[in-house]
Image 1 (cartoon, rainbow, N blue to C red):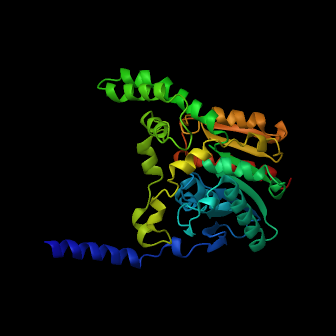
Image 2: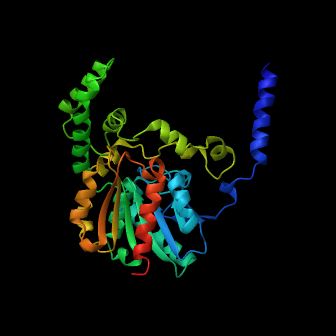
Image 3: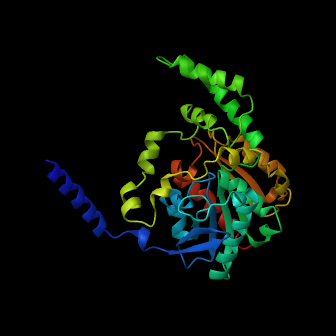
Length: 346
C-alpha cells in the first residue's frame, strides 16, 4: 500500500514537472544586491507598454512575488509592465543578516535602488508606484523624501499604512464596534469575545507592528477578507506550482520579520510629514470594510497629501476588505487603469 501511495505521489510530481510554467519562463527575473541583501526582482507583463508600475509589498516580511497570483494584478499585466520585488528580510531575499540594516531608512534606500535599477534597464518608460499595506507606508516614506516623487507619474496607495499609533486605535475601534454583535450571535464563544475586551482593557494602545493580537481579532471579525469563500474561488493559491514549478522557495511562506525588539522600533513610524512633500497625482484605493488598515486611514492620507485636490482622490470599494486585488479584481483593475491612463501624459 505504501509503495502505491509513493508511486502516485511521484507520478504527480512528474506530471507537474512536465507542465510548462509561467513562473520559470514569463518576464525577466534578476537580483539587486545592496548592503548584504540579494533582493529578487520580477518584471512581468506587457513589454510593449510605455508604463511601468513598481509594486511595494506589505508586511514587513511578506513577498512581492505573491502579487502576481492576484487576479487584479494579472489583469494589469495585460496592459502594463509590472515590477514585483522582495524587500530585505522578506520573501525570497537572501544575504547576510545584520540588525543595523533592518531599519525603515534602509528599506527606503533599498526602494530607491530598485527604482534606479528599473530606470537603467527600461529607459524612457513612465513610472507609477503602488504600495500595499506596509508597502503603502514604505512608498510614502520613499516618495516624500529627496524629491523621489519627481520620477513618477503617480502614486497608488492600496490599503496602505502611514501612522502606526493612529492605525492601532482605528483597528481597536473597528474590533470593539463589532464585538457586541458577535457576542449576540447564536452559539457565540462568549469567552473568546470577552478575552478581546479584556485584552484592550489591559493593552489600550498595542503596537501596530509588535502586537499581533489585534490582527487576529480583526480576522475573527471578518475585517481581513469580506467573503472568504468567494475569495478562495476568485484567487486560489497554486501551492503545487509555487513549490515545484517556480522560482519561489519555502521562504515564501515564512514571515522573516520576526524580531519583537525590531518590531517595537517600527511601531513609532509616522510618515505624515513625508505626505506634505508629495505633490504628484495620487489614488487612495481601499476596501471599504478593511479592518487591518481601516478606511479612515485613506481619508487621513488624503487630508495630509500636498497633492492638489484636483489630482488626488479616495476610492472605497464596497464589500471589500484588505485585498481589493484579490477580493474585487475587476473593480481594482478598472480603478487603477483609469488612474494610470488619466495621468500618463501629464
